Image (tube, rainbow, N blue to C red; front, side, top):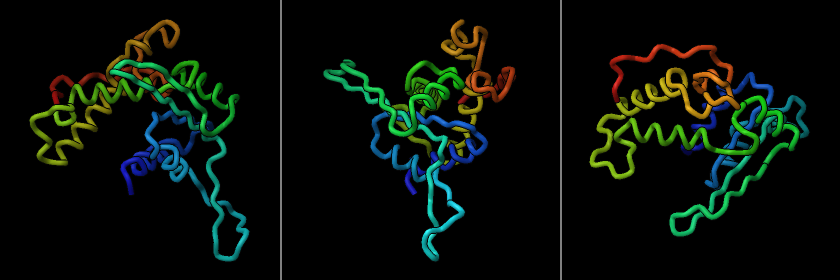
Length: 186
């Protein structure tokens, strides 16, 4: 199973109760098919003996953002709805309060934060993580504090929440920030 498949299986487990789901990805070709593989279910009626019919979640939307660069400068950004309809896209974007069009800003911001805080993920690192368990716990710690403890400047602006807001607060998972761990340094 590829890394994209494992990631999307985790997302599926977290999204089981969602009434609408919009997944926005960058231009990596593996993502759209991995999303479709992760979000299929068996249909109760079978058309052939012994073969189960599979169906992709009806409330799943897939958006893609492809950025084109020339000489390290952004030339164009293409926003495409790969699956779903415009009405569903509009509802999902309103519900998420993450913007008015398909974007990958939140995942790009998270990637930058993780790279900044976990030395073994920096691009030109002189050392790699020696133990996988230490690396995994570091990722877990950063993920928890990023989503539950650290307010985000963009989410805290007036047009979004209007007060100090974490991603978990913006998505409705919690109503308050968790107390920051005082000794947690990765």
